[in-house]
Image 1 (spheres, rainbow, N blue to C red):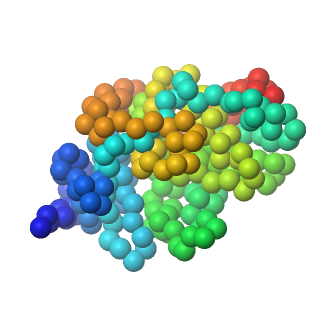
Image 2 (image 1 turned 90 degrees about the horizontal axis):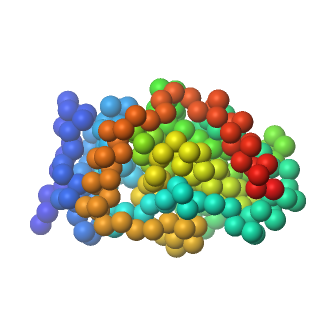
Length: 243
C-alpha cells in the first residue's frame, strides 16, 4: 500500500517529486500543509495544485496527462463573433476578482457542494492582493455574467476555474485571457484536469513529464507582477476587433 506523504508544516516550499504521484486517483501527491502564499506559489512553480472538499484535508495533485491551452490558438470563432455582435458585453481584468471566485464556487446544476471552499477563496484573494492571482470578468451592463481566475508564476498562467451565467460568458473570458497572455509571451494556460468541456474549447493534453519540464522553464522567466486591471483597455480593443 502506498502511503500518501504528509507535508511538513514548517517547510511551506517543500513538496514530493510530482513524478511520484499516484495513478489512482490520478495525480494525488500529498496531503496537509496550508494555503499560505509561499506554499501555493511553490506548488504552482512545480506543477502542483490543491484540490479538496470541505470535509477533507488539503490534497495536492499533479495529474498525468496534464490539460493545457496554447494561448496562440485561443481565437474567437465565427459563432462567437456573431454572438458578440448582438450583445452589449464588455470585459475587464482584475476588476472583481473575489466576485469571480465566489461565482466559480457556486454549485453547478446537478452538483452538490463545491471544492472552492471558503479557505480557498480567502487564500486566492490574498494572492490576488499580492499581485499573483488574476481574473477576467465579462459583464452585461453591471451584471457579471462570466469569468475566469488563476495564478501567474513567471510566464505560466495556472487556470483555476471559470463560470458562466449566460451562454458564451466563460468562453469569452477564456479567449480574452488567452489573447493578452499571448501578447506577453505566456505560451500556456494550465487547465489541470482534462474534461470534455475543456477539450471542446481547444485544450490539449501533455504527458506530465513534458509538462513539468515546460513549467520549470516558464516559471523562471520574468512575468507581469502586480494588478492587471490597467490592461483592461487592451482587452476592450480586442473585443472591438472581434465584433
